[in-house]
Amino acid sequence: MAQRGAAQAVMATATPAGAAEPAAMGNARKVYVRTFGCQMNVYDSERMTEALSAQGYAETETLDDADLVILNTCHIREKAAEKVYSDLGRIRQVKDARAEVGSDTVVAVVGCVAQAEGAEIVRRAPTVDLVVGPQSYHRLGELIARTRAENRSLVETQFPEEEKFNHLPQRTPSRGVTAFLTVQEGCDKFCTFCVVPYTRGMEYSRAVVEVEKEARALVAGGVREVTLLGQNVNGYHGEGPDGRTYSLADLVRHLSGIEGLERLRYTTSHPRDMDDDLIAAHGNEPKLMPYLHLPFQSGADRILAAMNRKHTAAEYSALVARIRAAQPDLALSTDIIVGFPGETDAEFQATLDLYSQIGFAAAYSFKYSPRPGTPAEKMDQQVPEDVKAERLARLQKLVEQQQQAFAAGCVGRTLPVLFERPGRRSGQLIGRSPYLQSVYAEAPAEMLGRIVPVEISGFGPNSLNGVIRPE
Ligand code: 5AD
Ligand code: SF4
Image (cartoon, rainbow, N blue to C red; front, side):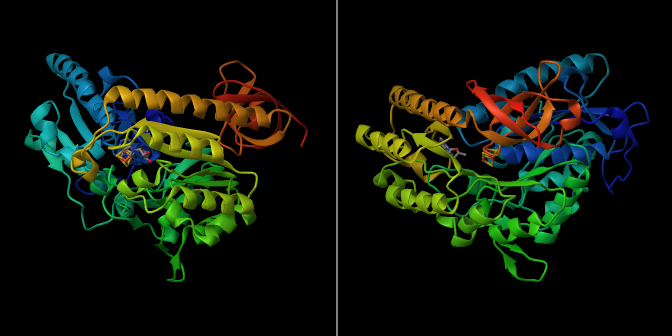
């Protein structure tokens, strides 16, 4: 995550009413943020640290220094949720040690575990002072001040009436050249394995003018590539500047008009919401990158029905064929769950078959993890852990093979690369290909933030390397 210096943080002014007291100049309070889970959590952490910076908090990467510790948590799988409690054990020790030398520490658990478990977190880990769900981040400053003043733990997991985005400060510039921008939150699809409808609530789309304002602020700060985020982003239906409802394709076209914004991406999409207009945009909107993350979860129709995915394997294949007809040069990625309740060997094989048949540049694959309160948790025929592990290993081998094949196919091509940051070696920069691969090249620092042709000469497990070519 991009860091801002303490000087910038203490000089920031606007302190909303009821917010935490700004620290004295030169003596900024420090906040340590640890982010788990998806890109939306990364985005949320940035917005929270920006808001806290306006209230006198400087970001620190050292837990021991922190006056405020924020764990921004993920509830999607059990492993992610349990990590929070192991972290809290370590944080308690640091908090106790700091207390011995007279420094107090506020510990806040925010995000999806906060939303799902609420007060249970304080019961299990009394070191926690604040539990705040994803819809209440704009109240963080006020809640910190209250927990300090009242010297007791507070839990805030309501879905409030007011809209948090309207209460968070504008984006602060200079976060690097790529950025996330949440345009949609929540999900109404109710896949039977998934906690998102319970942790993030029903689908909500931000108004186009709000999104545009934020995108312009990012671009003014040097951002060249924006990834529009939503749990079900292609279900976006926000209010347009003319009062009409805008689809995601409308939004992409609208944002494409921003000068200096060179690239757009969006994630995550549901196959059912890929409409014709959005598919066409992949062919005719040059700023929309040729990369699409489109989860299919399983290749077996019986499992897809039990997951309530609302599409079959054949429908998914046909959809991909239509998208590729609009944009043949497309890197496709996906999410897959293995070992959903009742999944047989033959059904798992159908997942491997669909994966092989379609061809992907990348994939995220997971063992099914029963989540409290979801319908699948109560289904019979839960698949044993060792079977899940064996299936995951087989799938991941295939994923790796296809990823390497996709990378190999880039060798010899000249790709436009957006240089993002310095590499490990001096004189080297790291950039992004249109297909979201990291690309290493020898390049002068002035090229940071620019899109430069790079001839790809080789690849490693997770990156490409190449040589810059004259423009
Ligand atoms: N178990 C395993 N994987 C899950 N995902 C969502 N819920 C679960 C679960 N209960 C995966 C899906 C989703 C991605 C974000 O996480 O593949 O697309
Ligand atoms: Fe995890 Fe979903 Fe919450 Fe993102 S929205 S942090 S994936 S539970």
